[in-house]
Length: 530
Image (cartoon, rainbow, N blue to C red; front, side, top):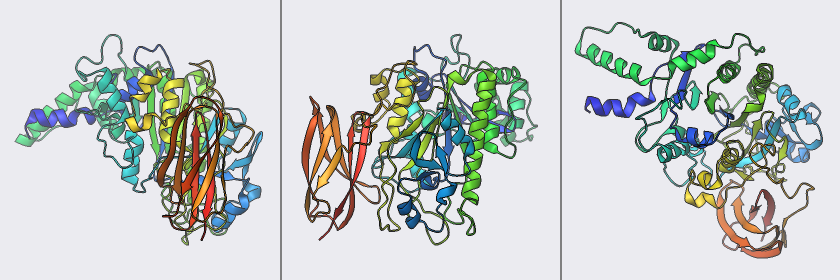
């Protein structure tokens, strides 16, 4: 490979810099996620913080279904949290939190936390690497996409990137990742829009214009040349350092907590004056196949330690935002590449699964619980998964439209065409910040989808209520896989309708009918018998 080709393919994604011992990656002002999340031409100082919980977090032991506790306890008797230990939520008695998450319980009770139930996508993939790619690219699970949803947007808005950036109108990075390397999220069609800062030594060498000695060899000369190009490429080090140095006092954070350490830097940079719109941090260890809890006490163990650190870090971060006077500007969200199976395994753990809850948090967030408790069969098998209620891309789309104030047409362009018609605008952000979002039309628990007969042998009639507009009915199996889009129709008016489901070609067992209509969705379990 020629020197020019090598540099063009690698240097923009691996430029060194670091603060407080953490690698920092800067997404250029032209980054797609940057442009998308910030909004081209949109006058906003809003910030989004994305927290990745790497490994596949067990959602059922994080957000616990009190309403169906007997079924939950029967499915995982060796790891179930005792009912009297579950943290209760003010004004909502159907669901509670893991006892290690007192910080997030407080935030919920302060109306600063939204719990979104059963987030996933059709045809879930259980490989850590592939599932992460799907979340970062927002692709369908059956397609290989080599660009990120942010990278695509950046290329659309800034086709000449990286030429001409930063410039006089934007001197700061529009997105920063602390730790890790450039993700698929920021990959454009030609180059990755992200700059990676990999070590404290490299960071200070970069901004001071120094470097370690190189050997007096041909390889040393090449290394010196690459370092020089990297130093020229990293144009944001000065603004990052200047912003961090402006803040000399912050609220306390827990010690021995790497997520808290990362979020402390984020708060510091936001307060320091960076116009950056997106921050990405990560926290791992959630692949809990064994010893998820202790045998003697299921409220403690590896998973409880992880959840406790996540909760404490987010609560400290929120308190710091309040202390610094910037909590009106910041919204955060968590995600993991997948959840875990409904049934626990014999190793006191859980195996890779499908849908799981996630959190959206911050003062601008419309607090509450979005969605119903996951459906848990009376008799579970090791292959049973939590059926999806919300597509994760609807979370992204809702934040883009209602927090970063992007036009819907722009938001739709960030996702594969087949997804556009199924994206929901969810009530995650309080009204008035961009525009009000109508709350879900089913707050009273009214059933909008049923089927009869149930149980059934070969065919059943699904009856559903639509408020009008785009209406989707999907059939999924207990593994979380989408079997068929049974109905996709735009109804001109509200009404009650029926559609027939022929399951004669399917094996006996439980299936799920999922209704999606506007901001509302419901999942109906159906039992096929002989």
